[in-house]
Picture 1 (tube, chains in turn blue, orange):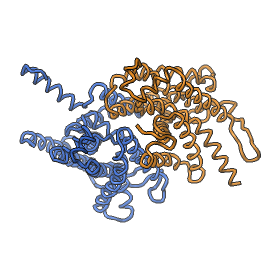
Picture 2: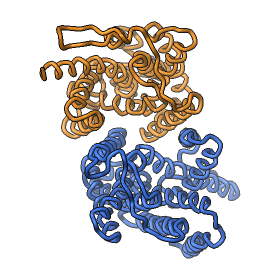
Picture 3: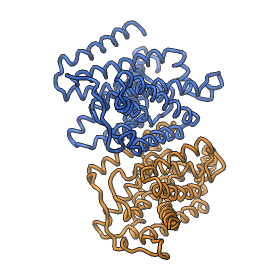
Picture 4: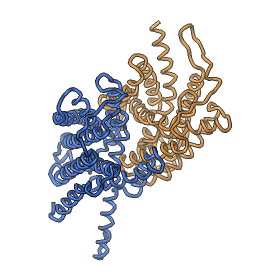
Length: 315
Length: 291
């Protein structure tokens, strides 16, 4: 990373960490928590959906694995740190299973199969009340005591920072270039010797690990989870929308997308109560029709055009 | 005795399956033939249900007579949505189509919730209380039988339309080769808009027919989007008959699953079937080819 960017990123992280000194309201911290949490989830999704161009609409599976993993492993008497390790392992196992089958499919079939897996898991958790608590739900242990909203907020910031760092590192590595080659043309990627199945699976593994941590954080904030909350298709959609809105395949995109989407949803919720999905829908349609590269991609194209104009050369 | 319970479940499954089949045929037109990945299919079915409900509430027209009207209105909506939203992104990746139709579906579902609320509704038809008895063990609820008959006629009509009209021929030509079809004088967008509209209309008609026997709420269509994809894949992408048969299979499989394992597993079964077919027999159970 070039030095000025590194400085900017460090400054942004520092500022984010200092926010709780100024913002004291629990409500505001909770909104900010959600923004950072979904920024991290969007970044994680972005590895598969953005860089590798594989539209996963089943990330609720890993999110749910995180939330339920934390709840069920600690209920079994394990300490929290071990539960955190195991829930990541659980998400990785899911990723291996889902990726192993789904990555053999392309286009709409891939997207559909990821939904199918997440829904099978959703139904399974609902229908096995002895193990999972079923529809009634299950208690999740508190990760923090005392100033919970502050701690959760800081955790979400750190998770976002970790996911962003991983994204920067990956996008500049050979692995990242392989992912982008797969996005551009899978057959060509295959023909130049890229093991597309392995590469996509590796991206999914990284993505699933971050998503599971996000799920655990989310579950622990609510202290109680039900399947329709953490395993629903709405979670999968929201994660994908955040990344697409901001700009898939960019580092900044998911963060910008989360800030815009979660703020819009929060404002909308105050006016119309439950109908925040309307704003998701409208934003999705607007993005596809007018901003196919997302906010960041669109802004970049605009800047490039302006720079070209001032130089007097066509863009 | 147990045999009769199973037989009853199979009959119920076939009756439900006929309506699934209609939803699936609509999707076969849109996704299988026109290759438009429509994630709002269930939403259109739900809109059909609300349209039929409002029609019944305000004019007293029973959905069994009102369904052509609902179908016509939804055809116009589908045609408009194709021309206004899908046509501009023509030629872009499936990715974009999925996100666009997902967005349209979310926006419509939530608008309905804003307008009509999230409450459950149901209509009361005198027909609902009529049951037909076959022997001492088998009972068939009359409205299901009426829906079944209408679905059969509508499905048959649709098949005829695809196989024996110019519009149908144009659709099949596009399915065979979308590059060459426009060169043969087929107006691609007009034909695609027509069949997209018709697919939406068929889903809405299925919705009208489901109204008397289902609870109505804004999210009622959600699971049908996925079910419709399952049917199209099961039936073999380009086969409308395949999708219809897959609808019947799904209906019976779900009914038996509910009977033996409980209702909640029924939906999971759909997806397990779907994943199995996609990974083991991608041409579908009834189809042989795969584009």
